[in-house]
Length: 389
Ligand code: UT7
Image (cartoon, rainbow, N blue to C red; front, side, top):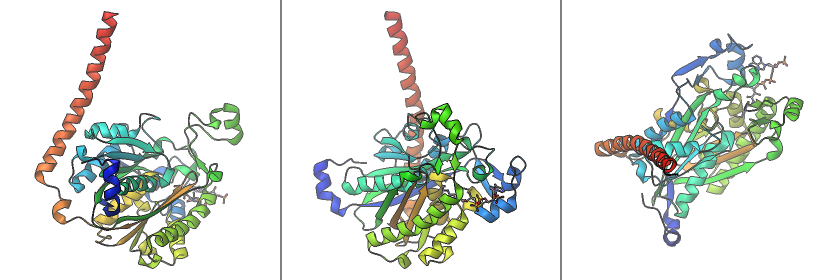
């Protein structure tokens, strides 16, 4: 994929639109049902389902991680988009459970895909992260600085849950979803976005990490928060969520010059079915205009919107020219909404050409070889230097 110089950017920007042209998702092998959960946590299937709409979630096994799930989702998205990893200019992974504090999970995915012309970074905006990341990528495409981006939401929430805290551990699951965003002269694609934050609510939902003020033992014991474990003031977050979903969707519709009633499908962050029903009521929309799959996956944080998008497409709930609203909310506090005018690629493009599929597989193999050989060369160089000195 060509990158665009700033000179070209000015000429081209007005005619460039950012379209979703590929999508994919991945979840771990193992599911954990509410009944299984209630064998080691003081809870029940009845309580969890009635309060949240969740029946089960997927939990990563030893060999699975945020990066491996992100990689699988990314491969699928490239397949649907029928582009090569080397066509990508940017990879962004929205996550609260990165593989490392650094290097970024996005850099690992970039290496495994052999996307050697892409920049890569992780984005931290909790459950709003995917919409934030998509907005960053869409703006870069519309400004003319990039031509194609891979945007991923990926989480292994199971690794930062306090499995003794029944008010949080029953809610979350692991998974990843990805989309390919590409420049096109065709009108549509990402129409408008609203990104917001209220750091005064930072104590309502968090995972303290190395740089945290809570890393100080005495302070951590005063407020009861554990390092690397999530805590949440559930009912306050619930009230915040129902308010900001409707507000931000209305704002993004105003920015795009359409009515809320013009929305064909809302793809919200999957936190709790009751939140989605309350938000639909506030907006005056039928509840069935809100995509929900929380029953099957639980809350997968930054991954929930792209996973729900994939399922909505699979269930044929999205048609060409539909207005789709994405809306995320969570830790920060942060929230974000985006309006997309969908442009479904032709069926021929969706299935990918045989030749491109083979080229992608060759690139994945090259990626493994390239990465290993670079590490091996560094080790040899080091040894040579040691011997020489
Ligand atoms: O993704 C980021 C955004 N997150 C969200 O949007 C989550 C927002 N919050 C929620 O979804 C809900 O607040 C929860 C599902 C977390 C909790 O539901 P709730 O209706 O707000 O329940 P609650 O916290 O007010 O608790 C009600 C009762 C309490 O017992 P008492 O004090 O009334 O005797 C809790 O101790 O339910 C009890 N409880 C449980 N009982 C069985 C709390 N967790 C459980 C549990 N099983 N897992």
